[in-house]
Image (tube, helix red, strand yellow):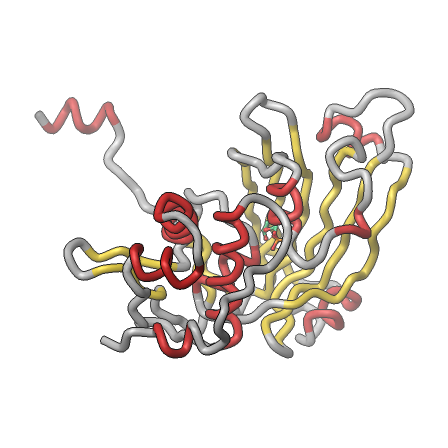
Length: 260
Ligand code: GLP
């Protein structure tokens, strides 16, 4: 198994991306190395000690960054043998039980992401947004609409609405909405997702580069802060031929009791 030290530390000293706590900077730096292809699926990450020394951060910071990436499925830990970049698959698998962002889903596959902005700004909310986001009279809604691509391949259209109190400046988002929210401590911790099959209308099919009427998976996500406050009301339209949703199923409590 290849050790990636040489490729990872090609630029010496290491310069972490700016913004947010140190462990998030390190997390982004590792994600970027994977996106650039500097490190590949299956490569072993240097030890916690080596990373801390080279990047000049504490081992606690390294551990926290690695834990986040393992949780997001970008890295995998094998007991006794270390931490590795997660394997690559052509279809994108999105876990149905982990609250991950589009950027994290793609990084886990070693795929680079980019967005074409279709819209972003502050608007008076629609009645549906007022209800979904629990807005009060006079509140504005921040809307962001993006075509999301991996390289040149369009994968999804995402239209998100958030209270302007949580997202006062939609223009400030660089690429990931969740990374932006994380910096202001507003990253959601829980979400309810509704998924349904649909076929694409002419406009969305055009954006996704497929024929009108092609299959899509339409997902509505309402996500929440720890406090129970709603963060986002997002409608995503994923191309049906590129996405797999994976759920881990466990036997229910009632059946377990019966089986005893
Ligand atoms: C997923 C979800 C969206 C969420 C988005 C954030 O795709 N379906 O509800 O807004 O991730 O992704 P990112 O942080 O990459 O902008």
